[in-house]
Image 1: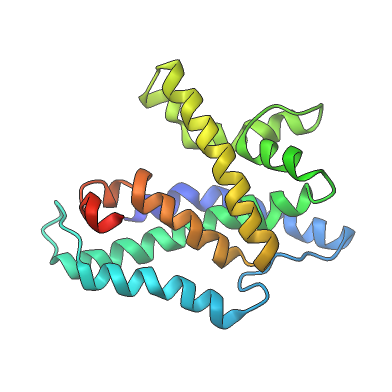
Image 2: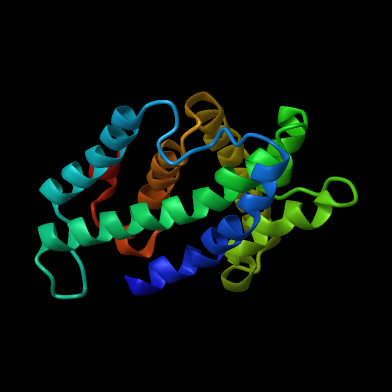
Amino acid sequence: LSYTLLNASGVLLGAFLVLPRLRKERKIEMLLFGTSKSKSLLMSAIPIVLLTAIGVENTYNMEPHMFAFVAIVTTTLYCIEEEYGWRGYLQEELKGLKPWAKYLIIGCLWYVKKYALIGLMWYVWHLSFIFDKAIGSNLLFLALLIFGSWGIGKVAETTHSVLASACFHLIVQIIMLNSLFRDSPNATTKA
């Protein structure tokens, strides 16, 4: 569980280091709670309550409901850490670009000159190419990142909330990626 939090701490730290510089240049629209603190908190409370009630079978010999609570809170914090970097900073930094360019960059495709390195960040951050060397799998993962970047980006633009963006990131984590939820809840419960 601590590994999960440490895994995204670099993105959070990077965002906290560069956001003060960006704030000197212009007003930052992305905030933790965005336009509605109550809606952001409700949005984040729903998966915590639901998964805690359902419980998550685990290999840590923890009671399923307690493990679900710890796992969902940890994963939510992980998503907040990442979204502070991707939406709280990077989406703000790229706000002057056309939406398609912004989401391609965040989603990991190459753009021009100074954005080329940024464009690879999200893809490289996930290190999927280490575990699965198949080109088709990596291209599919890249396409999912681009689509996810667009979807979460739209949530961020609408709500101006890092927490709302993190909640949508959390959905992907629970359904597909997060090792804490790989086998439980089952596919029917996830749907």
